[in-house]
Length: 348
Image (cartoon, rainbow, N blue to C red; front, side):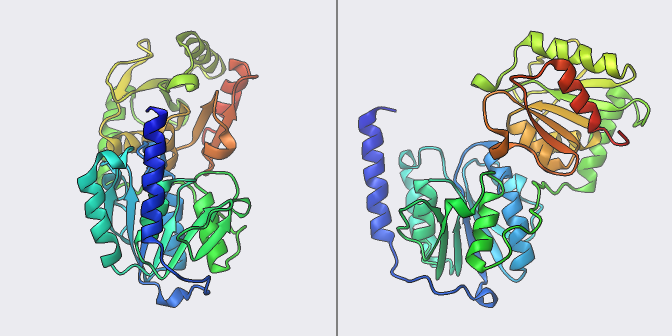
């Protein structure tokens, strides 16, 4: 994207925010009067949809009477969030919303008509999310700020929200409602149906055999983008280290969505579609994954998980559920990583 186009995009976004701005002070939020909530995080990456699930769980807990709409990025967001009964509607907005004028115009018209009482900017420094929250005309509009609070009635400093991308909006909501920010934080959760899990078990049993505590089934996902990627030699060495420590382990590759195996020496299962991939993850005793959308999908499935971080900060993006760990790998050998992985196996 050229500098001129970026400047034009920012100028249009600022104008939209000014035109949408609602007057209103920081009057305390009346929890009992909240009936409809907008959650805005229009990021197109898979992981960013899943990072919303802790906030949706928190909304269920503290606002059980409220219905929730979500403004996300990718078209598969509605499928991923279908397990959340409080979610009524999922809008999607692409990575370049000004390239989608019809979608933007439709949202422009619809948002203030839906009767939101609370709108949450759940993104970090997103002009699209702030615009949607401002345009919603909700009585209370909450966002994280480091100075610019345009369009908000409740502005929560970033310093009060922590650093993890899944936990920040939960802490933001707690701060706005005056709740304990340090209460236990919900993990990522993709609510799978029993039939989805049963189908995944059938696939994995056909490939590796039935579940057996003495011979655990371990899934490996090697795909990652850019600087997050590990080379083939790294994965070969890690697989050898895992087998040396637990020879009876049954390893399989979780094949990326593009369908091309990266670890052809292992039996593999294709990951598409997304809910089927998540259900497949749940049937392993452990998943080892490079930092990726599939890693977040595995985390949301609840499986024991080791996420490997080569370039990004695990404190901001790492899995943190039960028996889930993020590991920064630049200064670790494969023997260290194999040891950390096996420590997460049930019964370890």
